[in-house]
Length: 280
Image (tube, rainbow, N blue to C red; front, side):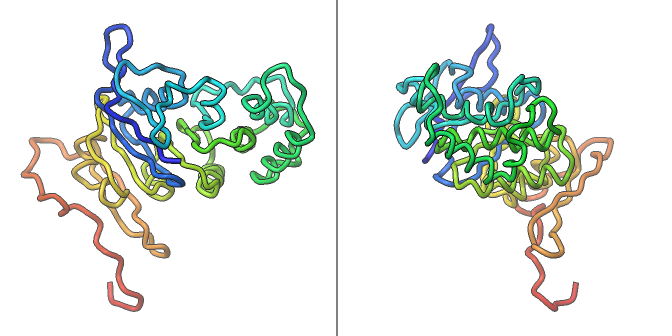
């Protein structure tokens, strides 16, 4: 499903949180939103999963305005893992994942055998079948994220929205969760704090600063030294992974003193990977 955010502006209590944000996520692509704290990433995503109403602008799902859909129909198309998800649910894992079926059967209706099969398949897909009877509140951070992804998959959406899905996870859990998301086949929009994770797992990135998009494109074209300095306030060094050839970033503090002359566009990008067997 193609997601189009068109000129989205959000104002709350007289403060403009995002302004004229436009972006596109093609079907099956993983699109990352990156930017400093308070830049507006979460605000954009909250509009997409309808926790916040935009002041102006539109969100289109395959050309259909999201605001025209009923809450139930919207939930059949868009599932979300918000940043503020509580970890104190008094439910078993199986009960929590079954909540993903509510948009399809409605509240108050019993879970059917078909629902149970869908939930079991979702848990198996994320490698969490053995957790079904465990209390959600007693799980580790990585286990909780896997279960929440299973709930989203049980919802059978076409779009998955993730707000900082790797917060408080160790490195192995971060890679595991993002690999699960990557392999879901869904259109994914994710706010990510770690730029190296964003560069590795996203097809495209949108950089947000001060509530506006300031750069967009493939990670290699976006995460340049100039953008890292201007937006994130760090000295960035794009390098190549020695095995995969993918871009990775090394960081230093910006030097003190007045800035020097700007490098031409593209001059600070990572060099192409060396051919196998060629001298370094």
